[in-house]
Image 1: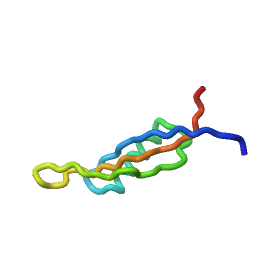
Image 2: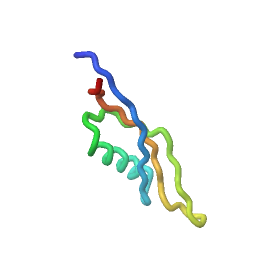
Image 3: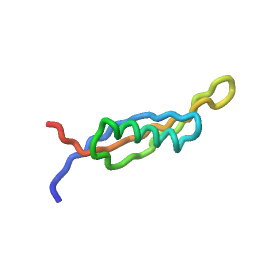
Length: 70
């Protein structure tokens, strides 16, 4: 196996349905512009509240992908 380097970024996905869907949205969207995603780690969950009710679920996700830049 060749030596490799991976880059890690954080993205935040949102959903009006659930934290799971919010995390899926984050990964799905990131996969449209990043290649070779390897690992996703949910690092924080929170909710947006409007007038005393949950209006959105948010998931902060760390994503790693193979680094190809110089």
